[in-house]
Image 1: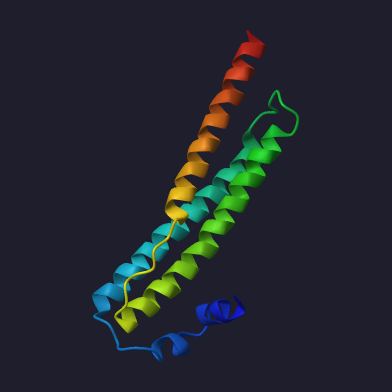
Image 2 (image 1 turned 180 degrees about the vertical axis):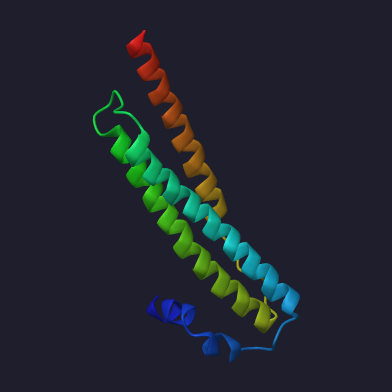
Length: 130
C-alpha cells in the first residue's frame, strides 16, 4: 500500500516504466482525474453546506451525520481519483489493459442511498410541521 502511495508523488518512477504513450491518452487520463476531483470537491462542498445551512432535522444529529458522510465521501473520491490516475497511467505506459474499478458503481449507490435518506428526512419534517 505505501509503495502505491509513494508512486503518487514520484513522477520519475512513473516515467521509468514502459514506453512514453501518445500524449492524448495521458491527457485523457488527466481529464478523468480532474473530473473525479471535481466530484470530490462537490461532495465536500455539499458536506460543508449541510453542516452550515441545513436547519435542525427531526432526528437528533441527522444534519451532522449527513454532513460528515458527504465530507468523508468527498475525501474518499479524491484519494480514489489519484490512485486510479496513477494505476491507469502505469497501465497505459506498459500497454496493459486499463484497471477495472467498482468504485463508480459504489459511489453511485452511496449517492442514491443518501438521496433516498434525504427524501425521507424532508418528508418526516414536512409531516411533523403539518
